[in-house]
Length: 130
Image (tube, rainbow, N blue to C red; front, side, top):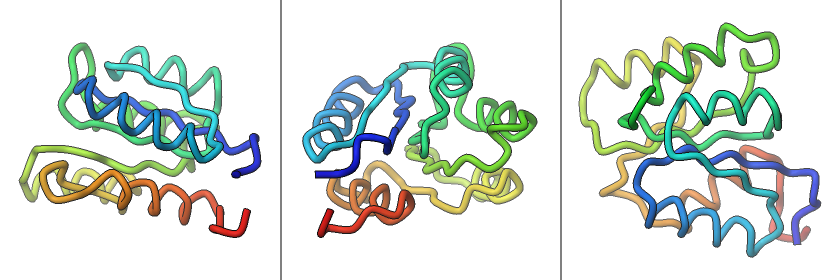
């Protein structure tokens, strides 16, 4: 099990994916917070200060790139680790993500939950021995 101090925020508008990620990450010991839009996600991020944020790009109220831009302008959020999950396939989104210091960008249609889990573990410094 993972040390309880590792906290993940998932901001995802597709509820089946949100539940699957939350259930899987919680089952291995992460503390997981969830939101379905960028506005609520930003508030939760600032309040809870997670170790990593999994962020959808297309969401109601405020999209993921807008939320990331707000995070990067915050003293705490300027260095938080972010993984983008999206169905948007476009060079503009990739370029904007890179400008926001986000180098983890996964197409939802191309990945499996376990790939995301492994990347979360790597980015938070969690090994399989813990």
